[in-house]
Length: 177
Image (cartoon, rainbow, N blue to C red; front, side, top):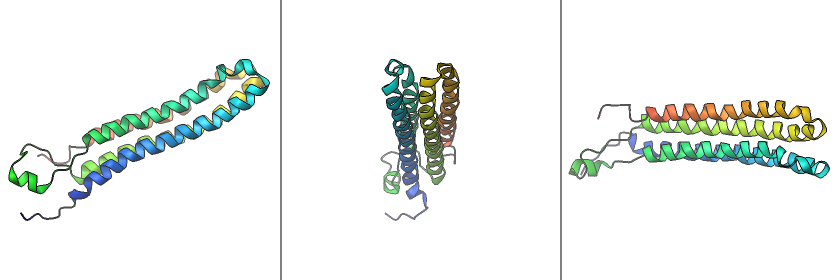
């Protein structure tokens, strides 16, 4: 029962760190965007309560950011697995694939790409949403412009989600087992 340390024993740590990073950073962006634009909606609602439901768009768009992080976290966590050398050497599961450092780093980068893009998008949505709903209360013609800016801010998180999926799909391609 001798096993040598190859460094790949720590690979699942990096994989799970990527899953956590995707969820945590995306939810931080969602929380900031929701809070910041929610303050704008509340402030605007005092003077123009009839516009509250129309101005809830930034809050909804910020909430979607957390879903992007959740999607990547689930994809990553289902791909992380640890094979102990004893199990392989005893033949309990001889067809089990190994999880290498390459795979762990692929999952870490996937989580960071999605999570940090979600954080940046949440900050943009919060700032634009706050100022936009207040400005919309004073000048209704600004609504379409605000929505377009919010869509472009949301697209930043979508780019992170796409890159995260691509990077996560690279895990498992490091070596031929």
